[in-house]
Structure formats: C-alpha cells, structure tokens
Amino acid sequence: MIGAELSNINHPEFGVVTIPLPIPKEQYDSCTELLEALEMGNATRQDCRVEELHTPWPVLNQLEGTQVNLDELDYLAKRLDGFGDDEVAQFQAMAEKLGLTSLKDLINLSFCCQQATVITDFSDLESVGRSHYMNLNGGCASLEELENVDGEESALLLIEGNQGVVTPYGVVYDNGMQLEQLYDGKHLPCYIYDDAVLSLGLTPRGKLENPKDTTWLYLPATRKQLERGMLRSGIQDPEDMCFQVGSNEFPAEVNAVLDFKQESIFDLNDLAWAVARLDQDDLQKLGAVVALAEPENASQIRCLAKNLDLFEFAPGAHTPSEYGIYMIQESGHFEYDPNLDEFYDYEKYGLQHMNQETGAFTDRGYVAYHGTVSLEVLMMEETHQEEQTFQMGGM
Image (cartoon, rainbow, N blue to C red; front, side, top):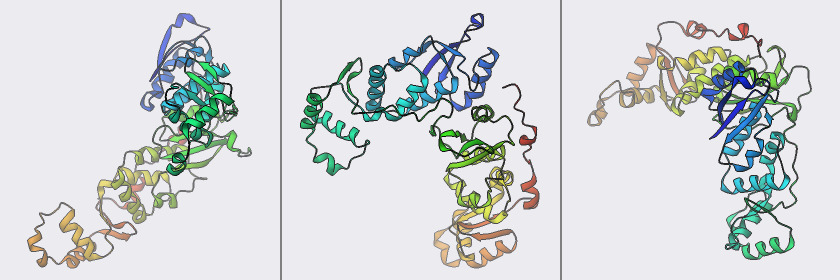
C-alpha cells in the first residue's frame, strides 16, 4: 500500500490530503469526493500535486513535487501491486536507467520492464543465467528448456558481452528493451486488478472502435468509477456511448439473454454487483433460474439474482426420481435415514412435488419457484431507473 499526500497547487491553504494507493474500491467514491472538495482530482487533468509519497518503491519518489492525475497514479499502483520480486527490481532499475519521471512513462514501463535483466547477487551466476533466459523468452520456459540452460555460461556471456548500468537496485541490462507506448496519456490499457464480473471497453458512439482508443471499466464499479471512466473516454452523455465486452463471468444462460448493444451500462453494473455477491453454487442456481424464468434484460436478471432464496434448486437432477432423491436426501427438509432407503418412492415423491409447483428441468438440474407472486411480477419489482436520472453535471 502506498500513501500519497496530495495538495492543490493553486490553493495551498486547502492543506494536504493522504490517499491510499491502490484505492480500495469501497473507498474510491469517498476519496474522489474528498479531492473534489479541495478543487482537484479531475478525471482527465493532472491537477494533484504530490507533496510526499510513503512507498516501498524508492524510485517513485521522483514523482514528489510533480502534478499528477489521480487515476493514472492509482493505475500505476495497481500495476506495481501485482509485481513479484524480480519485476520489482526490473521496474526500478529500468526507471532509474532511463531517468523516467512521468506517470505515462512509468505506466508504459510496467508493461515492458520484464524484458530486462537485473543482477543483484553475482555469487549465484547459475540463477542469474536462468533468469536471463526467461527474460529473453517472455518469461516463459518449460522445465526441460531450463534444465538444458547452462546458467553460469549464460550469465557470463551477458556480463562480458553487454554494458550493464549500475543502479541502486542492481546492475541492469536492458536486452534491447524498447519503451512501447501502450498508454497514450488518455486511454489506460486494459488491466484487471480486482475480481471483475464483466469488463467493458467504452468508446464514444460514432467513432471508429480502435482497441487503443478504448477506456476500460471493470464491473461491478462504483458510481464515481462509472462517471470518471466515461469522462476519460470523452463521453458527456450516456446515450453517446457504445462498448465492447472483454472478460465475462456471467453464467452462460445470462449471456444468452443479454443483448449488450441494447443494455444500459448502469443496469449491467447493478447486475454485476448482484452476481459478484454469489458463490459458485449460487451462480449455478442463477443459471437454472434464468432458464426457468426466461427474463428479457439485465434488470430482470438482477431481480432474480437478488431473490434466489425463493427458488428450490436440485443440481444435476434431470428426472422426477433424481429430484425426489435430492428432496429427501439433500435438501435438508427431511431427516434422511439410509437404512430406510428401499422404502422411499423417490419418483412418486418427485412427481408429487413437481405437480404442486412451478418448475422445470434445465441443463443444470431441476429448479422450482416458491414465491407468492408470479415470476413476471417478481422480475418487474425494483426496476432500475438510474439511467433515466443519471446526470453527468459537476464533473
């Protein structure tokens, strides 16, 4: 965790506020609102002065005294938070070697520093050589390949044949690394940090969809994350937006219903929040419930996800007999005695229940609805109206 002390350079009398990095999702809205109260933290401008960084990354201290954008700083912190020990050395050594001081360059470096080799211990050349081999091969190598590598020879060839640069983080060899411009200063490259149910790439409607000109959102997101993501993409009106789907953790039955071109990003976000709270068993159940209820959109699916306790689900049951076995042995409604197993008429009991309830066999098993209102009424309750009332003003 990094602590960034930020101030408004135009209003030093406002004082300093400390923001945790990466910003925990549950604190994102409050952090941005705090900065807005101090007239800084704009979604697109570099209007936060870094007074001091409390960080385990000494190379980042070069940012102190500079103006930064909050979301860029948060993004870099997320990138670095996922680094292993080798990457820590590679990033810091290459940043020092190249003299990088801007967030844009540091973000781009986080995607290519793994190509460099950093030697921090010359007493174990075998390990150095194997690591160097991995760096030259994109960080991937089979055990058989590594066994055939003469690590010491590889290390000596590196040291004798290349000009290393001494840094506080080790002797670094760039191996021909080029600082690619994956980040253009506006559209942060796709990078899933938290568990995301759905990732969406935003572009203004009517513009050519170019992967490099896409702003990514990771759902479920907070309201501020949605607002600021759209502003970074140049979208002032939610109607002036189209998006592409990246990663998707919805059950297959949910994806079969959703028409992403017609759905509201706010309804999809609400659905993602509902799905994110479900464990694997409940995700299986949701798939079966959707197959039974036949919803038409994300809002209706969200209502089903919030009311799963109104459904009985027998996973893997595809016949009345299997449903009866589940009800008697596994549902918890009865005290099952295996010594009396031969006396149970599972098929009859399963059929009896099926005749008294609204249910169906699905690919995932048998599911039945036990609510007091119809499925149609259930899916219409709590219909989400946020898209109609959403306002972008004040950002």
